[in-house]
Length: 143
Image (cartoon, rainbow, N blue to C red; front, side, top):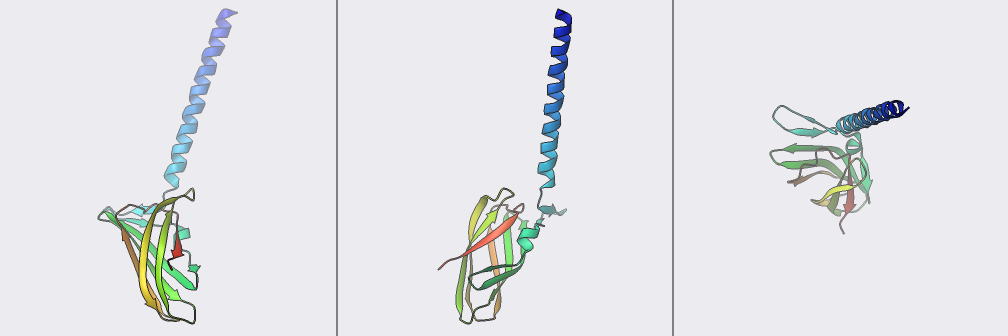
C-alpha cells in the first residue's frame, strides 16, 4: 500500500512538471507569433501591423499611408496628413505608440505646421526608442 502511494505521488509530480513545461512552451510560442515587424538583413525593422496602416481621422485631420521603421538606433513614423476642413489648421500631435495589450509604450510629438484646406503634407516623427513592435499609433491634436 505504501509503495503504491509513493508511485502515484511520483507519477503526479511528473505529470505536473510535464503540464507546466507544455504551458510555458505554448506561452513562448504565442509571444513569438505576436511580432509586428519584419527584420531585414541589415537590422532594419519594418512594422507590419495592420492597425498602424489603417487610415485615421482626428479633428478634421486625415492620417494615411503610415509607416514605422526602426533603423540605426531610431524609430521613424511617416504619415500623410490631410486637412479635411474648410479652414487652415496648424497641425501638431501627441503621438502614442501602443503595444499588444493596449498600453502606451512611449509618447512622442509630431509637428506639420500650417495645412491649407484639402492640402496633404507629410508628418515625419523620429524617436530614439525601438517601437517597431507597436500594434497601433494614436494621435491627439495639440491645441
